[in-house]
Length: 341
Image (cartoon, rainbow, N blue to C red):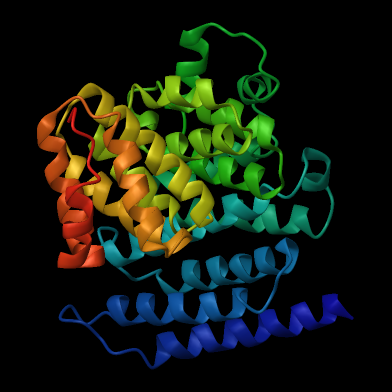
């Protein structure tokens, strides 16, 4: 029954995408590329959102890719909107393929979906989209989990660094981020930590701060405080602020506050003023969100200042107190600040 429903959905999707191409508003070159791509993304997102399981979603994207391949046959190869749509479709395919093992690639309906993807890629080759090309290569290797270097990384089997680097160079950082997110969602924490740790030192892949975010979050949740502080020592305050802000969309306040406080203490102990205002501002918001007591907030400020080695660090704390508690808070804090700062 679900399979029939999926087939009907695919047919309705195909009709809607074809209609949007026929009735598209044409651009200055007489081509409906911009409007069609915009409408295409809207429709595909709506249909994919109707399913909560990977196979029907994959069928939606397979239908979408076939329609897009046919619909853009007369579009210019350098069209920016087409590149965006192709990259988005490739990333969606890759993300959903994570749910399937190598053996399932040889069975219908997945076998048919993969063959359809490869046929579309051949037709779309003129666009030279690197995301599509990578997904095709990953499929050829047997799927997102089949690379022997990746399997060794996940099992924490020692490998030559040049072998690991060569593998990381073979893909786009976004593909590794999607893998880590999948592992965390499946609570395969040790594998997520192993892959994140592997990506962090790489000169290109490691510029994606998500790997630090995932790694540090796992260490915090595992209560590995000494290990956490050691890893934090190599992160500058600007990156720390970005990590916390990005993590806010995914983590609970307890985790965010713990990470922010740990970053802040390290900064206070070194006496470095770089991004200290930002860290204290974020910490104050998280602290009061977790505990609205004004007295507790003042006591926490005092406790943190005990770790400060730079007298100038009192000023961002005073600003935070004034912002959150007003002039009354400053008056109360006058006699509460540690004299050694």
